[in-house]
Image (cartoon, rainbow, N blue to C red; front, side, top):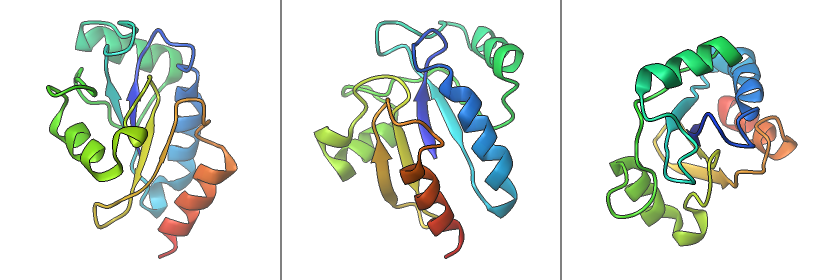
Length: 133
């Protein structure tokens, strides 16, 4: 599950649910990667160490967090350029905490808009389905 994140966003509390599902499913193979970005209203710190400190101190995150990246536009990280090509404009991030679920073969299985909580039934059901394949 790849999620573009931001420390100063109304959706930031989703970090707690992300950590909970990571703890529940990591032994079965779930990997969560947070990709901090300031692309939406500059809601992320501009310094990687501040991001790391914030997420560790406030949410005790144990899953990987990348360095600050661009997730929209032509200068986006190559993953986000690829994802936009795969799912089209409609599936590209429109805000922080947009989620892509990738299968073990590297295919985008589904994407979820920012308001979709990580522990929502549609995400959990899809994760469980993929982990049993």
